[in-house]
Every structure is written in structure tokens, then in C-alpha cells.
Image (cartoon, rainbow, N blue to C red; front, side):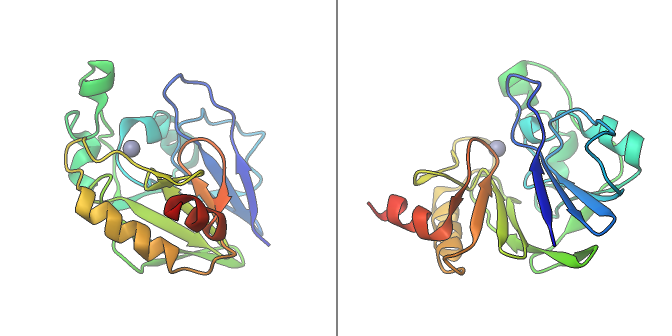
Length: 200
Ligand SMILES: [Zn+2]
């Protein structure tokens, strides 16, 4: 069984941070909530980034330091980790910041085992060139590609591409409609609900 928790927000800009646990292994998705050992019931194996925007990695250094977990980012967003123009630190906080530590590049369809489950990478570019959605059982973590209520991510940031995000939305709509969708901001939805809201 996969346990999914959303960790508390503690920064004004922060994205949702999800903690996934199966058996005695954990993965964190978009580390923008400070590390707190009371949440973590097992070994943190992976730190996934749905994309390399600053608001999805505000606490990445602390998670890396405390857990030693592998940071995973799409091969197409890898350069943005340390580039404050591409990761939007400069645009939105006027700080020349980024993540300068080790990271591994994810490719479409990669699968990462976690306890009794596995996490599959689905490439969903558009909001950024390397935006991905992560499928774990019947849960899909979509970053800023789509939002509950029929919305989708802005394409006006560096590397954003409206034609690409439209293709990515269609790709998501073709998945099993019973899948629960966990966006990078605000609440969750399902593919079925999203389809209704998007096509309205
Ligand atoms: Zn973003």
C-alpha cells in the first residue's frame, strides 16, 4: 500500500510537497517543506522534482543533507537547477540561487521501485521543457502541468511552450479516469473530474 501525505507549507511561494511511503521506503516529491524526521517513517530513497522551478525545491538542500537521497529531475530541466533565470529564482525573488548538488536525469518511462510500489515517469512538457508527471499506482503527481478545476500551468516562463502543454494535457486525459491527480499547488482532483472541468 502506498501512503501519501502532504507536508505543511512554511514558505509564501511553496508548492505542495508530497511524501510517499511504501513498506519502509519513502520518496519526497517537490521538497518545499522543511525536513522533519517526525514525518518520515523509513528510508528516503528519492527526491523527485516534477520540474526545476524554485518554488518546488525551496528545501532541497536540507532534504539532501538529512537523507542522502538521490535527486531526480528530467533530463530537459537539468540545466535549470543551477540557472536562476530558468528556475525563476531571479524573476520572482531577485536572488541568484539554485540547486548545485548532485542530481540524476530522468527520462520518459523510467520506473523507480519504492517499497511494494513503483513510480513511473511520464513526460509532460510545456510548463517547462522537462516537466514530468509521476504515476504511483492510481495516483498521479503532475507538478504545474494541470490544476484541479480545469486549470493548467503558465507557459510564459523561460522554456514554456503552450503547444507542448496542450499535448501533455491530452496525454493525461487519456490515462485511466479513476486516477487521483495531485497538483503542485492547491487541492487534488481525478482525471474524470479534470476532463469535465477542462472541456467545459
Ligand atoms: Zn512551475
